[in-house]
Every structure is written in C-alpha cells, then in structure tokens.
Amino acid sequence: MTIQDQSREETYYTDQDIAQLLGVSLGRLRNKLAAGNALPPRIQPPRCRNRLWPREAVHAWLEQFLITSTDDRQSEQAHGRRGRPTKQEARARRR
Image (cartoon, rainbow, N blue to C red; front, top):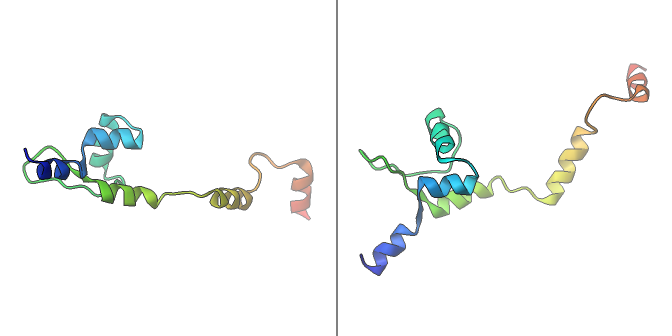
C-alpha cells in the first residue's frame, strides 16, 4: 500500500467510527440505518456490506446541529417555566 492509498483510507470513517462519534452502539447505528433515520451521507459500494462515511460530509452534517449559547437562552425564554403554573398565573390567565 502506498502513501497515497493510506491518505485515501483516512478520508473515510467506518461504521464503528461513526457509532463512536455519535455516541451510540454499532447495533443502534445499524437500527437507525434500517429505520431510515437522518444520518450523515454515506457511500455503500454495490454488493458490499461495508459502508464508507466521507469525513468532510460527516463533519458538515454535524455542524448543522451546532448550538450556540445565545440559541440556548432564546429557547429557554420562548418556552417559559416548566411545570404546573402557580395559582397566581392560573388566575391571571382566566381574566
């Protein structure tokens, strides 16, 4: 194997790498694939059991779920307080 071949192999993740990156077991990853859940783009050569996951595409897919600290604050304010409303809040709603 030449150096160029090694660099090509390093541009792809395996199923095990993806499962570890997403924090799920390999079986759970396979279940998600079978169920059609949203996952990063992948390459599956014909008549081959192994999938290849391009590193750049996986990282681009993950970046779309990036949450900044300002997004957290806005979502908390939009939802308000969790749980049952206080008696005062319930009375204010009735008016």
